[in-house]
Image (cartoon, rainbow, N blue to C red; front, side, top):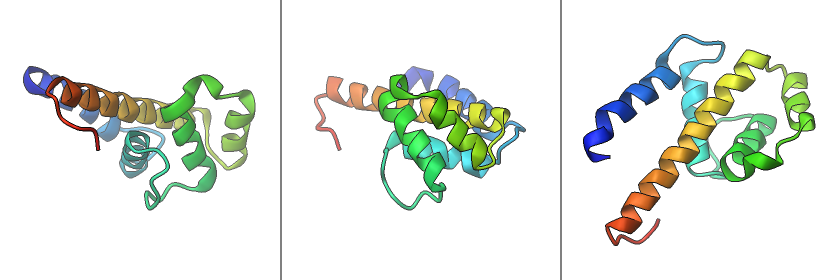
Length: 109
């Protein structure tokens, strides 16, 4: 990301490595899945994986029922917030990278 790489890394470090209610590994898995929604093998449980996919692709479609399903699966409000931020960041960075690649004339993945 060129001249903003240091800022991007600080943002990633803050979201992924700061103490929280979820593990750094779980936040990293959410970020990675959001960057490539629906790709299997990320280790996220089904309700959480579906939630991350929705945040990444169609955040406007999230409902109270989606959050209730996560709470029933054992996620706290704080954990849901951390996963949401991680997923949103993953989706945003993926879109940014794809946009920059398009400006350079590169083909998308």
